[in-house]
Image (cartoon, rainbow, N blue to C red):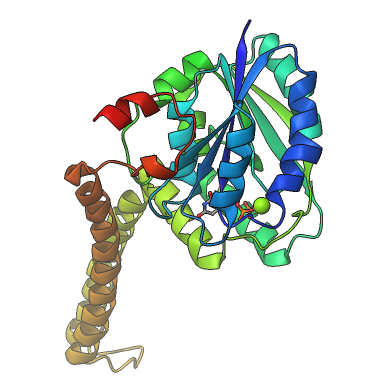
Length: 324
Ligand code: UDP
Ligand code: MG
């Protein structure tokens, strides 16, 4: 019989997780005609989440706990869970109930029909802030504008990927990663399912503006080199424009004797242009620095995450880790 792996990143979800699992997710999994395993990636929670999920794993062998040694972020948690998964299909879903498990049968059906990546697209939001909506719109507009056309606006991490996708995904090594962006980039046969993004069962979302902003920057940089190009083009434009203006000022002021009465002085012009160019240089340098910092992170070749084996439960190479 085939197996479905369910990967759930959990971070400070002590209030709602057990309820989410027993009342919303487990009934759906029990209905399936497949075996299932549930991999809970504890992303360095600072509350009682770890104890709660360990307790659940001790009672139910379907549940595996992969504990990180600290918070590495949701994107890395998803990656670790997918690497741990042994299923023929892997479902990723948030721990807070915003992505409705009721739709799982529909996702599975699309997968059975040959969809290699079945993607949940967030249609409407329930009670979501204006800024969040605007930010997400802007994000997809900019991604598209930068030539990353594989991402459908509103696609979320609520998805099923086939084993063949997971095997390829597991080969990717980059650090500054955004899971859905990479998966969209990989190609394969995609199917979309619209759903309504619900409200959290409990607790607060841990993605604040700062974290989301960093995520957006990461995806722009890892998926596109357009930011570098834009400043190249602006630089070229400024150089040409300043050359033309320089010629104009030279002729108007110094050859024709200022017939329009603009009273340019050479020093003003030079000052304006130098300031302008210095500003531009600084911006373009900052962008280059961003890329270099990413290259730096990749070049260090550190592992993407550290597993806390003592606190993990039922993992596939737990035996090996204990011997080592
Ligand atoms: N999450 C995580 N690590 C983090 C932040 C969040 O594993 O550093 C998990 C969290 O427990 C939840 C999912 O990622 O299962 C989505 O997080 P959240 O609800 O905060 O984000 P949003 O709903 O705004 O996308
Ligand atoms: Mg959420």
